[in-house]
Length: 382
Ligand SMILES: Cc1ncc(COP(=O)(O)O)c(C=O)c1O
Image 1 (cartoon, protein in one colour):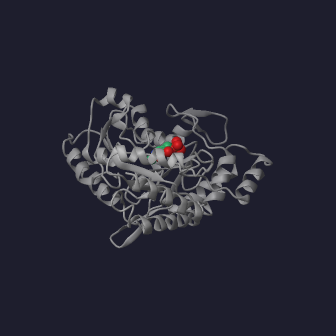
Image 2 (cartoon, rainbow, N blue to C red):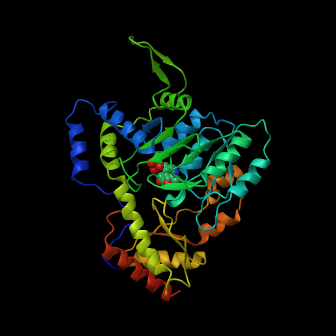
Image 3 (cartoon, helix red, strand yellow):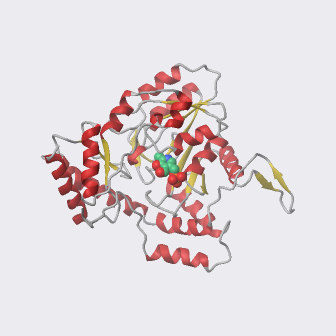
């Protein structure tokens, strides 16, 4: 065992972040004050969108988006290769979850499989699609947008991984979560995401009605009447508010988002330069360098589960923390009870071999070289 420890991800906090939070602590407002408004405005500017509504975490952003979209008893097409929150919140609002298969290399929703699944639905049923921009690579949003128009489905991009990333369509570059091809997008500001608030999230939309509904559900369903203490309760809502401390940290972090993403991309390029050669190449497959990815994760694929698990264990013994993002959600007991036994070939293939290597802005070049060195030793022993 070694005393070395390289996490698979880590937040990047500097003095300007500490100062921003400290200033709020000394101010009049710890909740519902100017930092929330400033952070929401900065998010709107960054994404060039009409509405950014911050909330307590990425899970609440999903929950609020589903509530605002009235997905109770809707059929919702989503992916099993994601963090449980994406579909747990669908269950929470009473939607019918329908898992669609993914690309076995990227883990991103397969739009051919989506098209097939949509084709089996009745035209009158309420429908939604929740693609996940996994690893930092935007899902195929323009194609999903076209399918959604045809089948009258609401589209909600889970952009927890891809904030800061872009995709290209028709020669134009679009930001993930900018809602050009979706109705809503959700962000997470968990410490391991592109930027952090400690915990935090946001709902993004260009739709005024959806934005208003999100704000209602966020704050107990209550709406104030102008110039009086009287409040109306419009819907059964929650308290999913972000605090001023979180917003100040988010606002400070957002100023450095492009630097964070560029540092992640540089690490991905460095890893990929080596991984195409021996001893890695005959044991590992990687997604080719993806210009627009925010590189929330850097995923390599082993040939089978036994080899991946061996690598996970050996790397851990050498102080390198890795992750499996993700096992298919339909393997979890709750989903087995809800949906019965399921197996999708792309998702099963993806999950069998995937392993996320350490990647975060302040991961030093020495640490990157150490990860590659220990991974080389693993490959030589497979
Ligand atoms: C794809 C995805 N969606 C949603 C979430 C939920 O975000 P949070 O942890 O901020 O609630 C996560 C968090 O890891 C995630 O990875």
